[in-house]
Image 1 (cartoon, rainbow, N blue to C red):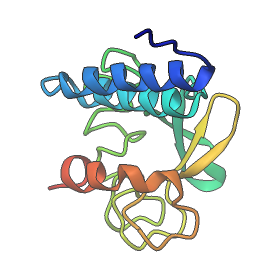
Image 2 (tube, rainbow, N blue to C red):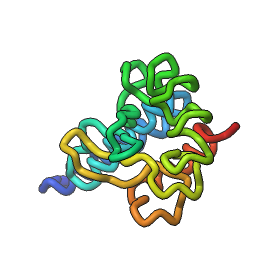
Image 3 (cartoon, one colour):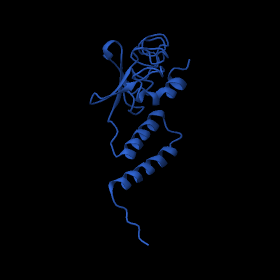
Image 4 (tube, rainbow, N blue to C red):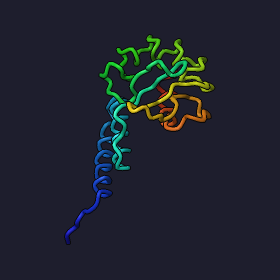
Length: 159
């Protein structure tokens, strides 16, 4: 018996299976590596390539760049790079700084404020809006930001 695989849907499914296996083998990987694999996996499952770069912006008019969510730990602008401006607990341009506007539990711009009205936005390099990076699960624009809630709660916002 011969099995013939035809169509784009099957090759997309095979890519998704391969990426799922890679993700399951990546239990010792960094959060950024797992996130990148998961993004690739969701793109493979839908047949659509994931956005090249997911970024967060905050503050008044969302003019302050807070870092890259989909970049590797080693990227200078990654929120996962503890030595960079956007991954440091001491930087004013970081959600990791619990005393700054963007990581505070009390700032209206804070990702860690469960009542924030204007938390950071998530956009890609094309300017497409994906949602808000926030602990405020009731924010009307949380959208794709909801998948970062557990990471914020357990890793970024814990004190």
